[in-house]
Amino acid sequence: MALVDPDLTEVLATTLRVAGAALLVVALPAIALGFALARASFFGKSVVETLVAVPLVLPPTAIGYLLLRTFAHDGPLGPQVLGFDLDVLFTWRGAVLASAAVAFPLVARAARSAFEGVDPRLELVARTHGLSRLATFGSVTLPLAKRGLLAALALGFGRALGEFGATIIVAGNVRGETQTLALAIFEDIQLGADRHALLLVGVTLVIALGLMWTVEHLSRPRAPNGTPRAARGNAR
Amino acid sequence: MTRFELSVALRLAEFELAVELSTDARMLGVFGASGSGKTSLLEALAGWRKDARGRAAIDGRVLFDERTQLSIEDRGIGYVPQDLLLVPGRSVRRQVLAGPRADASVFERVIGMLELGALVERDAGSLSGGERQRVALARALCSRPKLMLFDEPLGALDLPLRRRILPYLVKARDAFQVPAIFVSHDPLEVAALCDVTAVLERGRVTALGATQRVLRERASELEMLENVLAATIDALEGSIALARLPGGSVVRVPSLGLAVGQPILFALAAEDVLVTTLEPRAISARNRLPARISAVHRDGGFCWLEAELDAAEPTAITVALTPAAIDELELAVDSSVHLVFKTSACRVLAG
Image 1 (tube, rainbow over the protein chains, first blue to last red):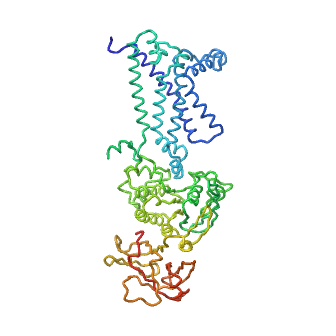
Image 2 (cartoon, rainbow over the protein chains, first blue to last red):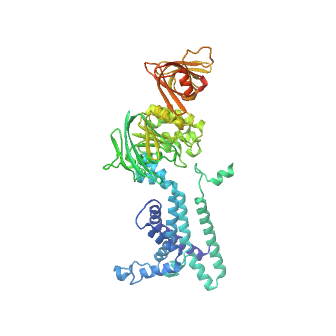
Image 3 (cartoon, one colour):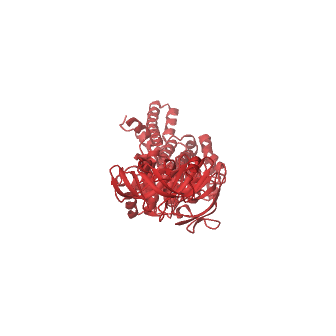
């Protein structure tokens, strides 16, 4: 066996590319929505909250099917309606879209929690002392929510990495194009390549452990002076 | 003197806040029990409560009325909240210089006055309660406010620490001369800082006037009525300092930490002052001051005298007496008396 399995390298590269791109797609809108849900009062807020939560409980295959129908030839975003092909189905873009769709609600909800963890009165004091809304967001809200937002993004990245059901329906299982770790494990099991499947599972496990450790570390409450509470407790 | 014109209405969970007052004051005290609407009033003035109605104008500058609604950042307010609301994980320097109105010259002056020089690079989260209190005060002052709002700024501290921080508030008031509203349920703090005080009960102003008079009228509800007097240290005699009142009378106070020429504020409980119609001799109490009674108040079992020292520039001292004592000594307005109290009865608050 070669020192570095070329199949593994290719699958890992595709996985990271797809998950990374999915994260780029969802980061800004999900964080913006999280902020709006945490701070703003608007008509229909509970409807938006419900719609954001639905993908969390919907089977990924159902999400995949909805995306498939949306981008199909005669779908609302298909070539027949738009007049041109967005070239989403069975391409890496489809895999990104599928991963983004399942990661979005997780990032939005975690971002909302991160913003809710910031005392709004800190923002009011900053504005009282002359900072504009935007400057207050940049210098008070964002720095204080930063750890929670990074945890939200790590969570979203992890969810995108592990995405299977929606991806296989929208993007298929094309080696070097859409075949991520989850899809490659599925293929290895079907082909009876147990040793290779086990290797991929091991890699997946290592990535998952690293991500979840990061999420846990970032989600830990901080003491007022910025050090983790647990660390301060141990130091005493 | 600043003109405070407040006509503020705000629906609260328990009652409707309906503050109506118009007065001139250097620092306006709002005195009341917890839950009387004091914080809500300040939040309405700061623009934190969008549902506040009515009118608020400070020296004619309208914060809000039917036509005007200044944004939070345009109200020019320095706010010292009870829970301080310092941004976690940030140095004192960054806390204090956070606002766009702060500049280096104001910063240096404020930091020096509040004795925060050694702490500016420290994380505010690592400071003691009293130090954090001073940081919150520095942050408000550095925003170069047109109006200061103090929301029980000492309320979260224990009593000895409150008394140690009080001088910094006095210094800030005197050095910056910014119109201010000071909210507290501590009569001593209000007496030490505010020349005019409004009493707030369930959202309504039930008394308004000179602080000492307003507090005296409520003396039966307070645990202790304190006279808070300003003086300047004339001389030191061992453990005793001679403090000269504005009218010339000299009061002996404990000298601990005081220096000649230093202006001080000291508290004297109304219950600690004795009254005699004869010149006291052969008595251990060091303070024996001639005075003239300017008012006698009877409120059921409580009686209060107001006695003035120094006719030219009078200093009023409130004295608590029993009705029997007033009758026996035949005390009445314009009676000449001597006030007697021990040096240790004078508690220096700010020096």
